[in-house]
Image (cartoon, rainbow, N blue to C red; front, side, top):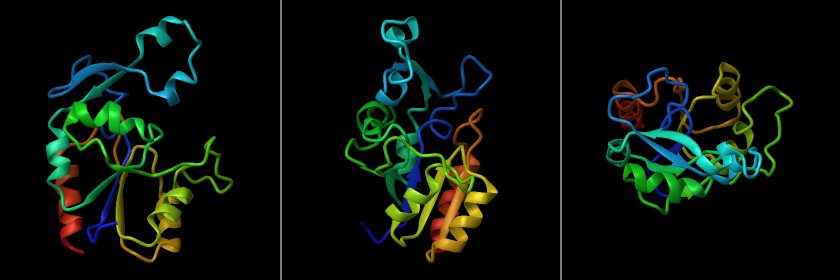
Length: 177
């Protein structure tokens, strides 16, 4: 790990605004991808299985993320496939580290996001900003109580994706460390 804070980045929601109502989002391109985590939930041979998952990505996000003072790490159910399927489409390096999740992901008995406890263990006391669409106040309270280093939780609504204000907030927070 570097001395920079970690940027723990989810794919669906922040990078892929899957709930956007507009058929075309400004600056986004549409891709048909076949990530394993999605294929496992499809009927083999079905039309959806053959076509793949529609993913909307903004090719400018890679340079904007790389320009932030963080070590970017995939914190997504896409796991290592984020490096091969997402990174080249937005201009991120294809060898980013990946948070390893329990397989299968378990529902949390305390009502936290299924990623929260494994992510805290993985971060091992390092400062981090976590960008995800599934964060709640319960996750924020748990992290504040169980993580001694600074942490920023940035919930990104899945109908918007990352916006200018989110990049500014990430930069500002990192500069306060």
